[in-house]
Amino acid sequence: MSPLHVVILAAGQGSRMKSALPKVLHAVAGLPMLHHVIATARQLEAEQIHAVIGHGADQVKAATSEQPVNWVLQQEQLGTGHAVAQALPDLPDDARVLVLYGDVPLTGAGTLEALVSQIDNDTLGLLTVTLDNPQGYGRIIRDDEGKVTSIVEQKDASEVQQQIREVNTGILAVSARRLKDWLPQLSNRNAQGEYYLTDIIAMAVEHGMRVAVSQPGNAFEVQGVNNRLQLAELERWFQRREAERLMTEGATLADPARIDVRGNLSIGNDILIDVNVVFEGEVELADGVSIGPGCVIRDAKIAAGAQIKAHSVIEGAEIGANAQIGPFARLRPGTRLADDTKVGNFVETKKTIVGQGSKINHLSYVGDASLGRNVNVGAGTITCNYDGVNKHQTVIGDGVFVGSNTSLVAPVTVAEGATIGAGSTITRDVSDRELAVARGRQRNIADWDRPVKKS
Image (cartoon, rainbow, N blue to C red; front, side, top):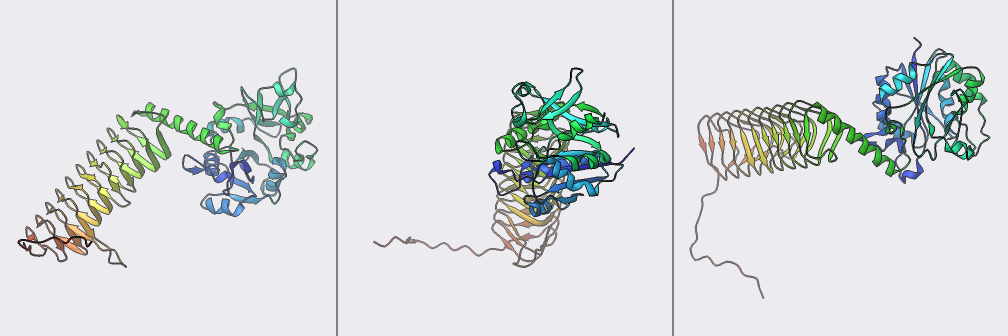
């Protein structure tokens, strides 16, 4: 089979977005629209992806620098036909070419596979959609036998043609050899003064080619974005689709309209997710995990039975089975919690390993630390890990009890079974089963007169 090349048109300014950001970089589900289109093209196993850019070209390239894309510059934006023509020198004659749009982000790979599978040197594939309100779209013109003969743009359509509800999505597939024959023949004699890619449909019919039509499963798959209202509509459709997937796979959602998935979320069975939870990046939830309201979870693995209580923020962390987190906890990257651990309200951890059964219950910061099994960390404890230049490690052994309002000045080791008295500032290592108390001696002064404000 001939190789597949994908041409993504991403050169437009998007003036109706009212933004300095190029339109294709506006986000749906946490990713620029262009990234969604590239990801779909990669699912099709395209030999090469070409992105035609123009307005904000440097911004688009910088934001997409990690993507495997051949960049094609369109110096002047003279229409879709002109844009595709810029990529012609990079298209092998024997290639099949699929044309996509950087501001149409949610077309399914299955929809495009069905389209591409129909094309050969004598068949052009066209993706159309039937809309209740076709205003603004090019109309699909068919003959008496139902065969596609041409596409008429809205501004060029007669009153009769404007009643047609089947419209052009702009997405088509055709052989590169045909494109190279037809695109130089395009004319800009139309209401817009542009070179329309859609004019090649009439050329295909004139040359006796078959126009094979496909339609998406849902009109939202081919909805483009011209303004922020349409962007929001696509966002909600995407999130509703994700909510339905999660419920099908074993999650109970307190409100399917109040969840946001901005990445890849995989789940086990019997998951409970309360309202206003945001998932970002790569997140895995094992069986029986419950997530309280208002949580943000990014790039995390959460084991079976763990409870994430309200308004906790978790990033780059791994959480063991039956752990309890929050409410109002923050787990920063590098946190690794073993089974049956507890990290409570207003606790922050960073690059910290917490052993099985250990607890950090309240109002503490534990960073660059390693805690053994069954450690109890009292409220107000801080690992002083930063000397202004370098970070240092705190090591706490099994069974250690750290009293409230303790400062552990790293680097420092508190060995197995040791006890730290409340209010201590620990600057030296503590050996096995020692009691360390490091605080000023208390003085009680009788008949003390408090200061008063001067008149």
